[in-house]
Structures are given as C-alpha cells and as structure tokens.
Amino acid sequence: MSTADGGARAGVTARLGALTTALLVLGVGLVLGGLVLPSGTDDSGPSYADLGPADPVRLQVRSLRIDAPVVPIAVTTDRVLDPPTDVLDVGWWDASAQPGAESGQTVIAGHTVHTGGGSLDRLGDVRRGAAVDVTTPRGRMRYEVTRVVVYDKDQLAANAQQVFGQDRRDGRLVLISCTDWDGAAYESNVVVFGRALGEPV
Image (cartoon, rainbow, N blue to C red):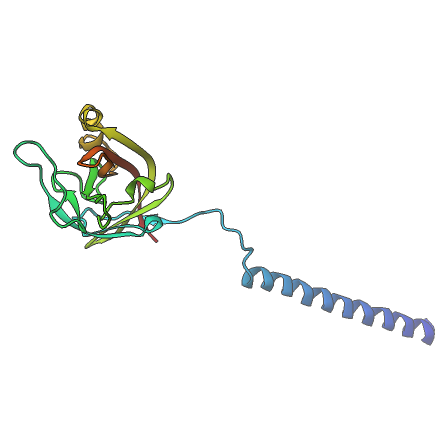
C-alpha cells in the first residue's frame, strides 16, 4: 500500500470517526431532550383519590363565586327540611350521606334571597360539568354537576325519593334552593345533582 493510499484511508477514518461522534452527540441530545422536555400533552386528565366520609364544613362553587359555611340541619316534625337561620350558611341534612361516602347522597340546602345576599342566590345559573367542592375535616371532596332541574312544590314532592332518598350506591351530591319569586314567596325549587369524583390530587 502506498503512502498516498494510507493517507487517504486515514482521512476517511478520521471523517467517519468525527461523523459517528456527531451522531452520538445528537442522539444523546435527543434522548436527553425527550427526558427533560415534556411533550406538553397529557391525556390522563385530573387525578382523584378516595376520601373517607366526614361531616361537611364548607361548600364552594367557584364558577358562581359561592363559598359558604356548612352547618347540620334536620327534618322538622312536620317533615320539612328548613335551611339554616343565617342566609349566608348552607345546611347539610344530617340524615343524608356524608361527603366521601360510597352510597347514599349528600343533601345540602341553602337560601335564595330575592333582594340578594343569600348563600345560593345564583345556584340556578350553574352549568353541567361545573366543579363543586365540599370540604370536610378529612379533605376536599369534588363533584361534577350532571343535571339542573326546577321543580314546583308538587313536582318536588313527587320526586322526593330521587332528591332525598338514601338508597343510591354512588355518593351523589344534591344541592337545593328556592327559585321563581312571585312577589310574595318562592314557587319552585332548583335542584342540582352532582356525581362524586373524589379528592383532587
């Protein structure tokens, strides 16, 4: 082999070595880039964890700017579920399921005041898919609004089992307030149903 052939071969070898090194650096950069830089797409959605049952202490519907303390209320001897005395509070029916329970449904009622200032004045404006948070001493239970209906007094009585019944197996949330002010009294009730998602992670 001539000196010229040896020099040419050495030059080719050197160029191949440089090219291999460049590809290796580029490959490492791509791998590191893939590890360091996220793709920006996450199809997993929000994560939720189980939350142990406990009495509710606060209700929040951020889309409506509702943020109210929760106090326990009971059915009276004449089978009426009255909201709390303070119009700024909402009342959890203490015979209904606690937030975080796997069965029954959590029933919370609050005031609408026709002149404004009631805890649930805007409840009828809530949209399907809106988040509702109920805080307990164990954490924050989130629900997603699935249905909003307005019942007059007769319709509410006819649907009492659906609204107040505790035989469900999904721990649903039910929010209730008044609507349809006629100048002297409220003629109907707005009822919001929400499915339990769990504690936001």
